[in-house]
Structures are given as structure tokens and as C-alpha cells.
Amino acid sequence: MNLKVLAGVLLVVGLVLGFAGGRVSNSDQINDLTGRVTDLSAQVKSVESLENQLAETKAQLENVNVNELYGLVKLEGNAKAYKIGDLNKMPPLIANDNIGNTPVVVSWCPLCGTLTAYDRRVDGQTLTFKVEGARKIPGTEIENLHFRDEQTNSVWAQGPGLAVEGAKKGIELQSYPVQLFNKDVITKMRVEVWQP
Image 1 (cartoon, rainbow, N blue to C red):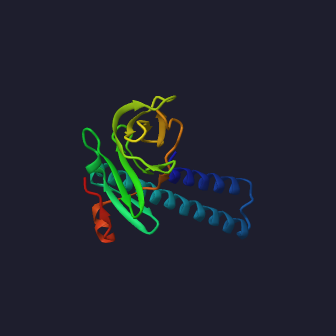
Image 2: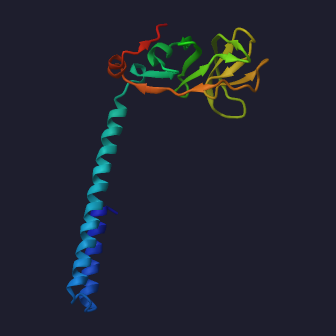
């Protein structure tokens, strides 16, 4: 039921009951009822405003081309941006990179739409990754990009950053947060952009 209709029904019911019972003879009760109607009207306007904002946001998101977005990774005062379109190729590209002194791997999974950033160091060794292909994450029905490291020949699931086979099986890469921005924001921030 629409909130406007509900507010109107509550107002009418309140007035009818008040008059029918002879209980609205006192001005305090009338003022109380008027206050409640005012509160309900404000809530209805607030809900309508929120519905309009959500509809506008949804329309904007439907027009976003994910390939034009950049993932920003910040580490210890350093930052670098990764354009999703540069990673979202066939086969997908993986960024074996450094942000400051930290070796990172940044990747986009076209199957599940995830952009991830992980530390490439495991047990004191810096790993270099290459695309292994698409597989289901063991124990799930989720298809995900997998990559293989050149040093230990282990296979890693991109989404959870977890080694699913090989010498490092069961080890999870340390993840870093990735924020999404459009090109204008990245340009204004004067952030270095990874080049494939």
C-alpha cells in the first residue's frame, strides 16, 4: 500500500473514531492528532525522496561501463590505479606489479565481476602469476578466474586469493582493499595508472 494512502486512511480513521467516541472534544487531543498527521506526512515525503534517489542511482549504474572504471589500491602512502578494461581481455591479464616497495598482483575476473589485489609475497618469496583459466572454486558452484604462480607451480583462485592445488595449497594471499573510481577522479588525484 502506498504510504500516502496509508497516511490518509490513518487520518480518516483517527478522526472518525475520535468524533464517534466523543473523545475529540478537547483541544489537546486535536493537537496531538494533528501532530501525528504532520509526522506521518513528513515520513511519506522522506520515503518518496529516498525512492527517487534510489531510482536515479540505479539508472546511473545501468549506464556505467565497467571497463572504464579504475581500481585504486593504496599501500603505505603509495597508490596506483588499474583500469578494469586493461585487465578484462581474452585471456584476462594479470598485473604482477609493485606499489611502492610492496609486490602486488591485481586481477579482474570476468566470470564473477571481481577486482582483487593481493600481496605477492608468500613465505618470504615473491611470486609471479599467470592466467590458469576458469574453474569452479573447490567446494562451491562459483566459477572463478584461477592463476598459477611460476615459482611453486601452485594454482590460486582469484576471488578468495586461495591456493587450491600445489605446494601452497590452503595458503591465502594477503588481500588489499580496492576502491573503484572513474577516469576523471583518477586524473584529479594524479595517481599513477598501471600500463599493461
